Length: 391
View 1: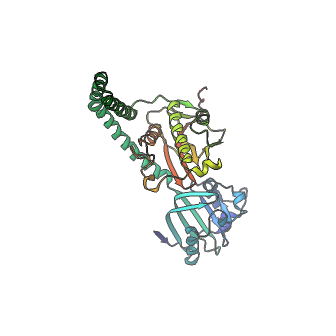
View 2: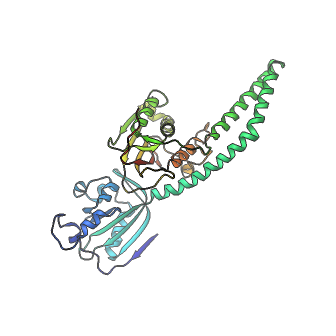
View 3: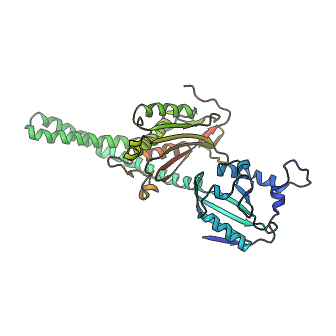
């Protein structure tokens, strides 16, 4: 749905893009103000060439202003993308149009759920000022609240199961063991089956008990040491059949977290990625399976962890990406809920636990998936001026 607004006289493109930053002026020029905005802003000319992009837009598009000035919008997005239709409409009407929930997908860009506002600059025919709003973090926060609610339900269920199921289950198992020595060989198979199934139910209850609300012991943790530990475990075990690639920002500050729980989160995500690749025989046959671990610093996100005396931000982004077949569409929106799984033998508790741990740390987790590319992104708190833990 598009909203159409009108303006009397938009600001001149000359003031937006042309004066050098050092130009003397009695007033603050528009370029300086737009550069300071945390919202991505770009200016396109009549041929969709980039005339201006602020710092937030450079991060949003993943391209520097110097590079943007050498390309057109068509270098980032295919010409059938709805954004081009929006630009045409704005230029024809000379108005402001707002559109939401757009997908900006191209060889160098992939953004989902993006809100775009386009404004025609009447003093410069054909020029359009675009602002982008990535709502993925807000949606991830909403989903995280839902996941935490679901995790609490599992916590309550596990307490009931431990009391109402686990105790009588021990009696059933003990009785089956006693019967084993006094029955025929054919009946002994049945007693072994009873014992094995009782053990399986007990293991499931034990797994659910880890959802309990327990205090987390946190300290400054170097995320790269966590990832290196996970990479070594994966590379010599369940991910030996895939290529593990690391793209790290070495200047990241430490995160305020529980190291063992972060290892559990990352192991779960990397294991899921390796299993997804293994489910595609063509990838395995060509030896083309790949898992990419990435870290980055994203400005502009601030969430405090309750009960902490440290200065916490939420800009540390850890990404686990694989080139497997992708997550089925029907479970994608419920992926972090308990008992939801696409694996024939899965319990559906692994990603629910991941979401709970990340939420307990005050972080966020989100996922984008399509055939050939699945990406889990973790947004974690960092500590300013703190020492990372020792190895």
